[in-house]
Length: 186
Image 1 (tube, rainbow, N blue to C red):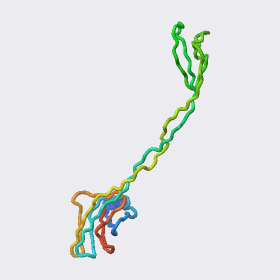
Image 2 (image 1 turned 90 degrees about the vertical axis):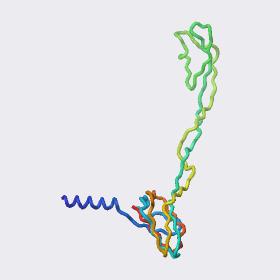
Image 3 (image 1 turned 60 degrees about the horizontal axis):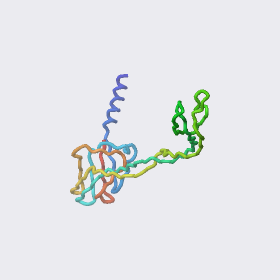
Image 4 (image 1 turned 45 degrees about the vertical axis):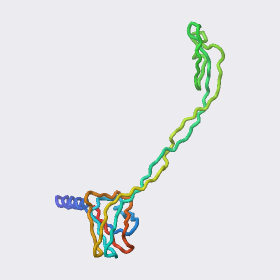
């Protein structure tokens, strides 16, 4: 049982620190298979037709921003406008209610507090409501990864600081059609 656990653990450790090489062509390259998730760039190797060439690799990623899709919702309402008296009958206050009106709500005992006529009008209330999300703008972000200069048809380069590929694509410039560019990713 311990041997099985040890072998399984070793396989997971090896997989976690596994490196892989990706062969790239000139132009835009979409990372294949499980590489599409990206990884840490360890090195690049270039074999070129020209004895001396400078090949540059850049990470290319598209990012889309979104905006709210807005709708205007129109809701009809009933407006009841009227005046009421204060409790001693000396002053009148204009007021109104929306959608619901009942005379019994404006009675004090048997005394009606409403002074004058009740007018009824209809109005429409407009509200802006977010109903969904729509793509707004797509930005293309390009970050330089590595540049390799070949001498005698061959060259390698390693990044001075940590460089990462986060999926997307890799653009290879400065290479001829039959050049072989190999990216090493962890």
